[in-house]
Length: 413
Ligand SMILES: Nc1nc2c(c(=O)[nH]1)N[C@H]1C(S)=C(S)[C@@H](COP(=O)(O)O)O[C@H]1N2
Ligand SMILES: [Mo]
Image (tube, rainbow, N blue to C red; front, side):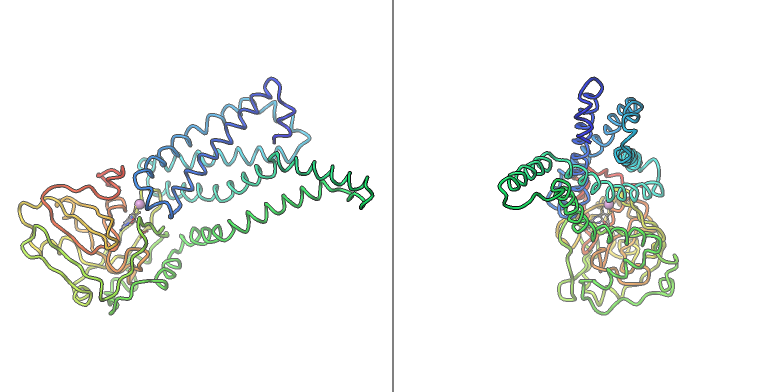
């Protein structure tokens, strides 16, 4: 669009130029912060910084509506000027659509507590889809219009002219056109080749969220845990009482995904209890389990509905261990060595808080926190500690991994 903008560098044309620049920078900031937020690679070592990046993304995202509104005020005149330029009109519509779509879906995600999991789930898929389509489009748009591309094609003309004058070889009939088309094509193919596979993977898992078991089956196949024997599902689990989970889990972890074997896995309950216990896997799978169906909500906007979890109610474990009167907090440790979280004794007494061993009648795969994970259905999923291997009863308080990084200690859905 800079070609057009060059010609508009007067009066309101100037406004359009700076609007275009502002908009460009906003998109750059949002793209960078957004990609950092979803990129699993960054999760671990950004730690606290992630919360700041999230706020930056939200604030800039909300502000991104301002240039759009401003443009819409100037749009009438601009639109007329583009009468003879259907492609530029198309481009304006695409960019406006993207910005509005990102804004609306982003605002809904920001207000996830207000709009509820159904809406924020749809908003997250829309936000992702727009990014998958919009970001490559905008990258292509900017790469094919940068100055060096034009300069290099100008240089080509000169060289070819000189070559023709020297009589070395005749100038190609349309050197500018072919060279530009070639570079554009190359950029297009390059983008498609680098982003295509991840896009298809994302598309597969998002569409899979209608009948999500497919993706979980794949995680089960890739299960890095080698614990034997497999737990035998109760009749209520197989077939799953809830009819099979709806939605798909995004694999979240702040560490590399740990893997366990019979040799290195154990489960401990200790601290302020009458009777501490430590189970190995064979002992642990022999404990009496129950089955429940519940929804699973992450604060970043996605949910998985109707999970059939089979495991030991936390309540039962605590009762058998005998909680001492001075205990105040239940602290959960992950076998990843890093992640922890807590519940108050009162919260831990809810019937549906479960130390889960199976999901939809199958062992929980390592990616999803198996062999054993906590499930706290009434709270956001950051309370649902993966690779749970120790429960400690403590007197004071403890600040969990995400709570330390800005998440609310009040995680009620
Ligand atoms: N050990 C550990 N447990 C964890 C997390 C984590 O990073 N490490 N992430 C939490 C968050 S924020 C969510 S949404 C869920 C995600 O579960 P999933 O990876 O099985 O989808 O796990 C929770 N439990
Ligand atoms: Mo989460």
